Each structure stands twice: as C-alpha cells, then as structure tokens.
Image (cartoon, rainbow, N blue to C red):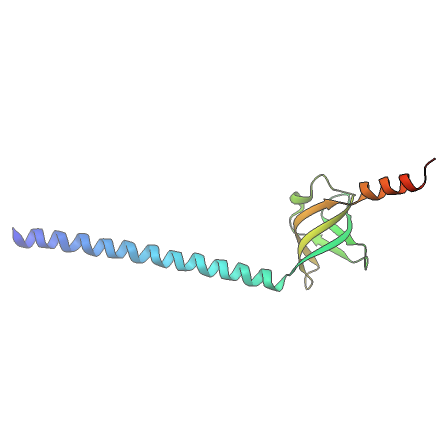
Length: 120
C-alpha cells in the first residue's frame, strides 16, 4: 500500500515538473520573438515623411524626392486616400515599403494660410 501511495506521489511530482518545464520553454520562445521584432524595427527606423497617399491607399509618394513607397498596412491610412499627409512610419528602404504608425493631415492648414494671405 505504501509503495502504491509513494508511486502516485512521485508521478504527480514528475507531471508537475514536466508542465512547468513546458511553460518555461514557451516563455523563452515568446521572448525570442520579441527580440526578432525589435531587431527588424531597428533595421527599419521610425521616420517622419511628408507626401501624398495614392487614391487606392496602397502607396505613398514622398514630397522630398518623389520616391514611391508601398504601404504595408493600408488599412491604417483609410480615409486619407489622395491626401497630402505627414507619416510617422518604419521605413524599409531595401524593399521600398513603409509601415505606418501615425498619419497627420497637412493639406487643410496650408489652404487656410493661403486663403488668409490672399483674401478675395
């Protein structure tokens, strides 16, 4: 009877350590995924760029050099199609792509200043 009870306790302890080891290994996998993401973002610096979003919202043309960039996340620029904007984005120069983090409209302020300077 003692052997059966001792065997059951040993089995419970072994299963507990096994479950703990699995959860610990999953945590390290999550940490390595976070490191990979951080490394990719380090290679794609966050920049502020002024330009125009295409009418379909899938590309962006910079004012400075007229370079065209593919927008990786076009859903995040919905409502700004065809507008002059300022983007805060991670720039992937090797792929000519941007991952937009923030969009700020620029067109309205310029129009108001021009109207104030040239009253009709």
